[in-house]
Image 1 (spheres, rainbow, N blue to C red):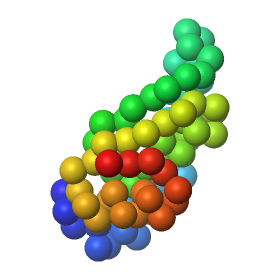
Image 2 (cartoon, one colour; image 1 turned 135 degrees about the horizontal axis):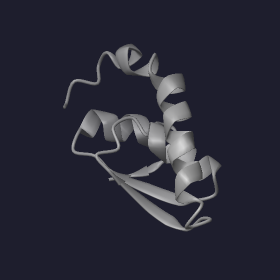
Image 3 (cartoon, rainbow, N blue to C red; image 1 turned 90 degrees about the vertical axis):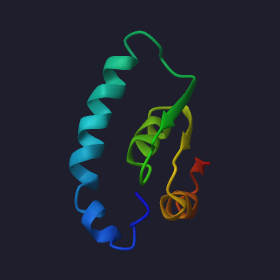
Image 4 (spheres, one colour; image 1 turned 45 degrees about the horizontal axis):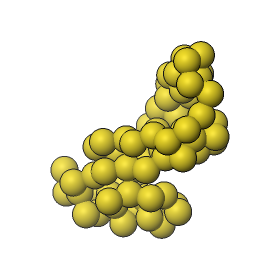
Amino acid sequence: YEDYQHVEKYEKWREYLENVFSRRVTDIQKYVENGKALDVGCSLGFFLNVLKAHGFQAEGLEPSADAVKLCKKQGLRVY
């Protein structure tokens, strides 16, 4: 998906997705408290932000150059 020019479409999902992802990370932390995490196909980095907020060292892979730029503007490590 190269068309992240209309990022506002994706931004309106941020709060919902970060809540869903936060519950998933809480489930993961039952087995692994923290550590390194790789999000493949990380889109705009919503899951990465949640992982970082829970103490993980998170990085992402994303095929969209536009999405990678937006993630990097947030200070995320995305390639």
